[in-house]
Amino acid sequence: AGPAAAGRRAAQAQRVWATPPEGASEFEEASNLLAETPDAVTTSGSGQLTPQGHVAVAVDSGGSYGAEEEVEESDKTALLQEKQQPGFWTFGYYQSFFDVDTCQVLDRIRGSLLPRPGHNFVRHRLRNRPDLYGPFWICATLAFVLAVTGNLTLVLAQRRDPSIHYSPQFHKVTVAGITIYCYVWLVPLALWGFLQWRKRVRERVGPYTFLETVCVYGYSLFVFIPTVVLWLIPVPWLQWLFGALALALSAASLVFTLWPVVREDTRLVAAVLLSTVVLLHALLATGCKFYFFQPLPLEPLAPPPQATSLPLNLLPPPTPRSQVT
Image (cartoon, rainbow, N blue to C red; front, side, top):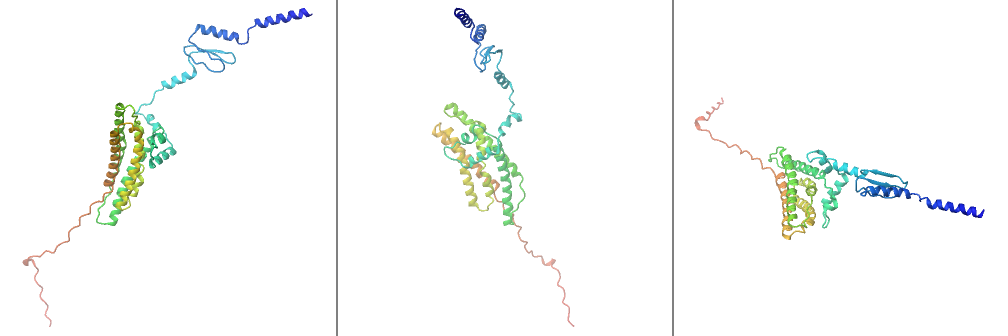
């Protein structure tokens, strides 16, 4: 029995060594397929393939194989790239600029009211996501408040002095709207264009985008809304004090935001640019103060009627006195 058992064990061992291990034939088949398509790449395990050619071979944990022309993720990327972007003349193009919630708007308003040195409004508040919702409604509110308070100032002045002639001035709403919106769009456009030109002269100067510049200017005007309401107080020196404080806060917000961009330029250019920004801001504030809050001229009083002497021939004859009997 001993030699027979030994013979059986030897035969089993030969069959075991002759049988290839599990998965060896799979790798051999994959090798043959790779020889036919040398540009393909295989990955083992449950991972997906990264195709470098037109054919990809996959070997998963279950030993299954697949050959496909494009991977699903590549198809999605291609579809996204082929999707046509909306034109700037459509509402869809501007929809992303109004995609902002109330918390973000309030946070940006808070940042414009409390400027701090070294605290960049664009980097810390906008975070590369400028919006037009806040600047649009800030400018609209400021224009409306300017026109209303300008008329209320004249109404209150007429109550104190009846000699002042007042009539509703509705054209001030149009003047205020055109002035504010032109300022918020044209001045940032000129500033952005100048910084783009300086970027070509000095490569280290990296300007903000045009929408970021408009957003900074729009939020910087928020401080003037409560200031205009406080200008209803009929005390001239107090009005100028409120105006100076609002101008200082608004101009500081602009200077602290623009300083990281212009500090890489020459000192002369940086000083002239920041001085121009502050000067234009001051002209806007003082111009609104003088135009919308100027007192109306006094209504001229009619001269009192003077007594005129009539000629003697026009005088009525004297009436005779009645005699007493």
